[in-house]
Length: 482
Image 1: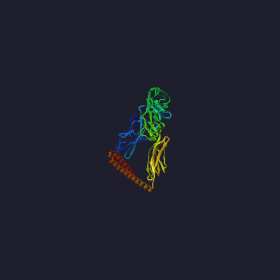
Image 2 (image 1 turned 90 degrees about the vertical axis):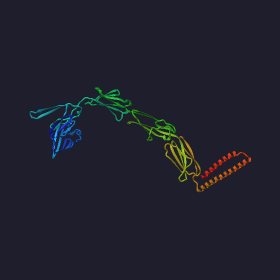
Image 3 (image 1 turned 135 degrees about the horizontal axis):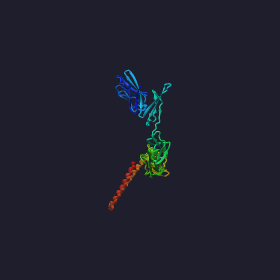
Image 4 (image 1 turned 135 degrees about the vertical axis):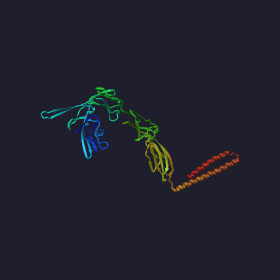
C-alpha cells in the first residue's frame, strides 16, 4: 500500500495508481474510503462530488485523477482508494494518508530486544505543541494496521477574552429576576468573577453567574463582569428594565344623568412606545370615547388596553346613564283589515320605562329595550271617539302624551245615513247664509238711498261680511268632501 504524508491545514494530493498515466480505454475513475464514496469522473466529463459528510466541500479531482483534500486535519489520517474502470477491467489502488503538523516537533521511537527470546519491544513518543483548536482532539498510535484506543489530552491556555450575558425569561420588566453570566475562553475557565452592579462590586466565587432579584426601573444602567485577578479583562452591557404605568379615571361603576358631561382621563408612563385600544361591550372603538353630553346609548362597559411589546395593562369602567323618561312620538294608524286602530308610543329613558295606556287593547307589543329606547304598540277597537293617554314612567319620573282616536267601526246603513245627513245639513247651512247675505245687502242699499249717507262705511262692512261668508262656504265645502 502506498503512503502519502500531508501537512496539517494544507491541501493534500493523493495520487491514483502512484501517478501512472490514464488507460486509453478508461471509462470511469472513482475515489472512496471506508465510510463511503467521495467523487466520480466519467471519461471526458467533469468530476462529480458524491460525498455528503465532512468531505462534501473539501474534495476535488485533479487532471491526472489524483484526489485533492483541502484543509487537512488529523482526522483525515485514513486509507483512500482509487477505483479505475477500463474496458472490462476494474482495478483498485488504496493509499494510506498520514498528517503531520507544524506543532509536532519529533516523534521519538525506542526499540528494545529481549536477548533470551529475540522479541522486540517498540515504544514511540509524540512531542506536540497544542493550541485551542485541539481541545477534545483524539490521538491514536498503532503498529502496522492495528491502532490503539483513542485518547484525549487536556489542553490548557489562559483566558484572553470574557463576555457578559443576560439570562431572563421574556423581556426584562419590573418585578422580574435577572441573571448575569460571565463567560471566559480560557481552559480551564476562571471560577470566580467580580460583577459590577450599578457601581457596586459583588465578588462571586465558584460560579460564573449572579442573579439580581425583583428588578425595578431604577435597575436600568450599565453592568460589568471581570476576572478577579485581572480587573482590566472585563465586559459590560447597558440593560434597560421595561416598565408600564397606567391610570384611568373614572373606574368601576359610574352613574350619570342624561345630558351631563363626563371627563375621561387616561395617564400613561412607560419606557417605550405605547399602543392604546378601546372597546365598548367587547366591540372595538375607532378612537378614545368622549362624553360632552351623555345620551342613553353611551351606557356600557368600556375597557382600555395599553401595550408596550409584551407588557400589557388593562382597566375598565361601567357607565350607566339614567334620566326621566320622555315620550318622543305617539302615532296611530288603521289596521290592514280596517277594523282596528294601532297606537304607537315611542319613548326613551333609563332605567327601562314602564308604558301604560288609558284604554285596554286587544293586543300589546313591546320592542326590545336598546340604547335607552323602547316602542310600545297597542291595538284597539274604538266604538266611539276617544282621547287616549300614553304614560311612561321610571324611578326618576314620568311623561304623558295624548292622541285623539275616532271610531272606525260602523255598519253599512248607519254609515250611509251619517254621510247623507252631513251633506244635507251643510247644504242647508250654505243656503241660509246666502239668503241672509242677500237680505243684508238689499237693506243696506235702501238705507243709503234714503238718508243720502256716503257708501264708504257700508262698503267696508260689506267686504268684511263677504269674506266671512266666503270662508264659511269654503269650510262647509271641505267638510262635504270629507
